[in-house]
Image (cartoon, rainbow over all chains, first blue to last red; front, side):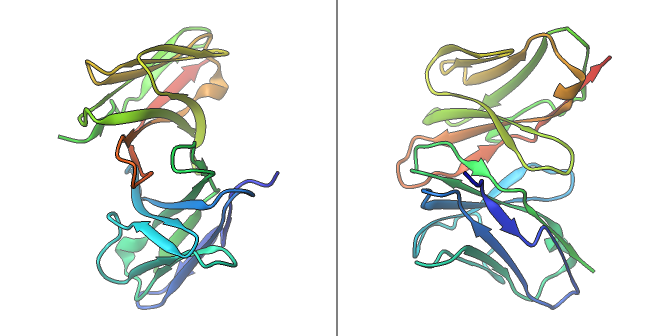
Length: 113
Length: 113
């Protein structure tokens, strides 16, 4: 049973470019969560999605960041016009139900030059 | 006041000793509590979950929850060098419309051979 998959594992972007991070949840999981871990900081919740719906985006920056979880395909976290402060590890987690345990993917490490 | 607080450490214990990791939380409505282990450069891995007051044991790990004191701890018996990692305490609120986890900063554990 494959775990949560994220790609790319490493992403380098120049300031002003767009970053697209993909997450495929575990088989049977329909709840996806995105977290960000800045250098030397803890994990911070960004957004919680179910298929085709954003349930809670209280942790998302108001500008430049967006997320989706289409009916078919992976969840996408998009960062437009990246800045150096966006450099971080972005983790996706999935669960079978809102009350169930969240399992984390390997993360995407974004570096903005 | 941070919602979830942990001593950042490092906590250093000799091999074979008991490591005690502590976490306090501020929201009395919190219902679910988790300990994740994160090795440097890797993703969080679930160690224990606990939902009711008291102790929960799994192998060398024991989680303890005291909701009245808003305190959750993790004991690691017979500590091994391979236990050296950052341990993240995470809390989920009781509200039903979000599954987001609130993480502490993490405690770095060093087990010395």
